Image 1 (cartoon, one colour):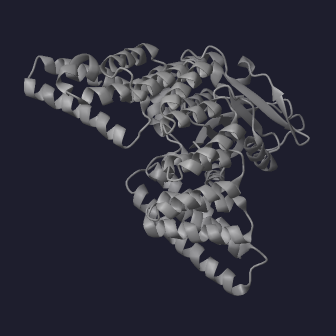
Image 2 (cartoon, each protein chain N blue to C red; image 1 turned 45 degrees about the vertical axis):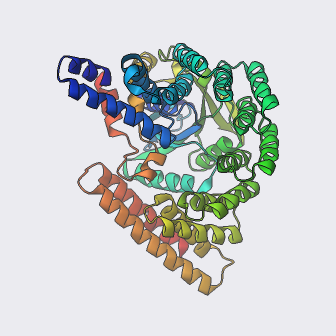
Amino acid sequence: MLRKVAKLLYFDNWNVLIIVFTEMRDKLRKWREDNHRNSEQIVDVGEELINEHASKLGDDIWIIYEQVMIAALDCSRDDLAWTCLQELKRQFPGSQRVKRLAGMRLEALEKYEDASKQYDSILQDDPTNTAARKRKISILKAQGKSAEAIRELNEYLEQFVGDQEAWHELSELYINEHDYGKAAFCLEELMMTNPHNHLYCEQYAEVKYTQGGLENLELSRKYFAQALKLNNRNMRALFGLYMSASHIAACPKVNATVKKANVKYAAWATNQINRAYQLAGRGTKENKCSVKAVEEMLESMQITMS
Amino acid sequence: MSIKLTTQAYCKMLLHAAKYPHCAVNGLLVAEKQKEKKKDSHSTPILCVDCIPLFHGTLALAPMLEVALTLIDTWCKENKYVIAGYYQANERTKDFRPNQFAEKVGARIAENFSEAAMIMVDSTRFTMGCYEPILTIYDHHENKWKCRDCNADCFEDWCEAQKITSALLEGRSYESLIDFDNHLDDLRNDWTNPEINKSVLHLC
């Protein structure tokens, strides 16, 4: 769609064409900053930008080449990835950052041994190169060697204890291995360094809930509540609060006070959930079925609680 | 005892996997509720008429899955459907065997629907042309999951399914597919995917 629009405007106002170009460039920048993995769109916009507007990009072009190259690898566009890589090699000969990109291309072609050698050569020159170490761990992950990946990532984190991306990756690896206790530990590290991040709170609560048992359920309810405090529109936290409070209230082991409190929390959450759905469902006929389904679901769970 | 898939169900499964090629994805399959159980009901295959895409990324967490199962169960009751199956595509392309998580969810569904099936998507054979069915179907027998070969017989109309799925993939319809995760991000996102259902119908 964008291609057709850009070509049409060639024959129109030159200024309008500049606007299209700046829009494309800004889109790429936003996706870069938000770390979006919308690779197909990045390739669409980026390829056009590189082919038709390279001269206008100035020094931005190099970071765009990097961004488009990685997206091209995601889309099996080795032709485009190769072009970007060549441009970067020419401009930054001997750069470790470009070497890493060359390694990623080898990974995409499943040439894991060659990729590993590439990263090893980076690490020989610079043993503190975190990017190369993390790529080596990614290779283990790609090969399905989860236990090794977990071991290497733990070793990495002993040295680079502040790397949040790594802690998060480790928590995911543990979750996939159903090692919820260790996943919770990783999320605790993240919560400590990012106390205002509602997503970490909510993920921690989900892990605790999955671990099960009364104590973990109560912890999970507390952290769902904390996530809501940090962001009152986090629907997962709201649903999580509802589910954990309902389960605690329905548990035969709890005393009457705890049961009463959790029934109250669940009732509050029910109210908030219904409100959220009413707000969202306004105007659309289709969403009305969702609203009804949620109401009924909440009602049916009330019955099991009492 | 075997299940069959309609074009709509197969289509949405593949679109879900195509939307998140770098993630694991999972979802549910629903079938129309049978009025009465006839004596020879074993010979009539269960027709899975629709697919509800659930999550992408980290699948193995309980709370949102429970919410989704309960909510979709309620929705099913209203529409005279029953949850009849579970599908999963793993994060790694070469990994198409069901894992512990898939078996757990499948078993949970089988508790409510004895003929439930677990379906794994084989991403290594996933092409734009959709020339062959890329699923492996597992049936629940005596607490074990038995693998069954998936061929054209597993579809209500394989030729139609192949044609329409391929067309929607080419047209990048997966960009507008909504799964339950998208719904939780923004409640206005409709996990029944009415627009895609319309596109499928339109191409039929």
